[in-house]
Length: 340
Picture 1 (cartoon, rainbow, N blue to C red):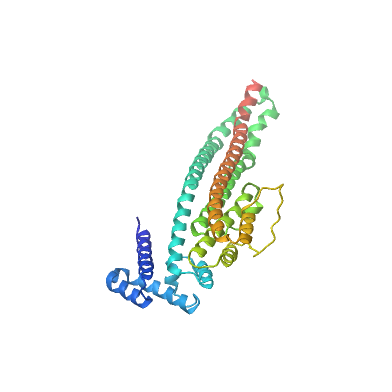
Picture 2 (cartoon, helix red, strand yellow):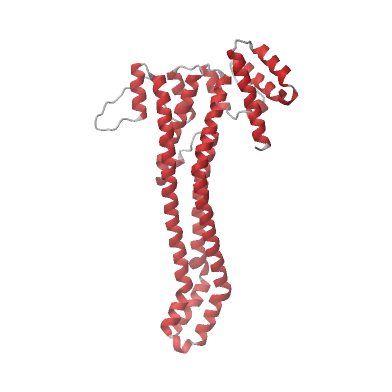
């Protein structure tokens, strides 16, 4: 555990103690004094940040919170939404931290698999680049000299093959390599962005829904995260409808309270359909908890499926590009054999 992780654990410890003492019926001022007296100097800054956030909750906003206090949680927008909903901030922050750890554990599994593929692709392209460099410097010039030496036997048209490859080697040899590297960087950036959004639990950019291989992840990710946050808001004191509205807004979605339910028997019911039906029945809070788990599981399955499809497609493209390079590199040998 590094220094930053140890600091985070200390902050969470202070929040847990505050919540436990609060449940025992102690007043805020008494809790802060008790924490200050018993925990001492090592936890003084954590207790101070906690006191700042709780006082801001009482005053009805986060505008007075110092940057250091906000930095302890990195949940400024979520805190503001929770304050407007009247949530219990200490308990909410602990649940958010639990969700953050769940997201980190889930993302680490599919990220390790993607990194393994990325290292393989980088190694493949690096080896191909080395081969192209060696051929361009040492092998192809020798073939050009050899063709010119046997110009009478091979013919002038064949004799120009190696010279054409040398003069157009950026097009024939380097462009496929650059294309492979660019595609790998684009795919790596997309999945790195997805992992960062999952770790920070923030809205996934709409650009994902316009990309064919990843279009399904955008709504699945934002819906799953919104339901998780709605469940946390409800568990810490918010009303179900208001919690859904606030949570969906955090992730660029909309929840229309009391929206009409279309009972179409020809279509499989979605999570939103179940939520709206449970809203009519008055069991929305229970259904949110269930759908949050279901959507989270569906999100993980979709990420794994998308990762496997994208890496397979990129693997095929890399093999085709390297195959093109091999054809150009061996073309002089093929024509030399044909001329002899």
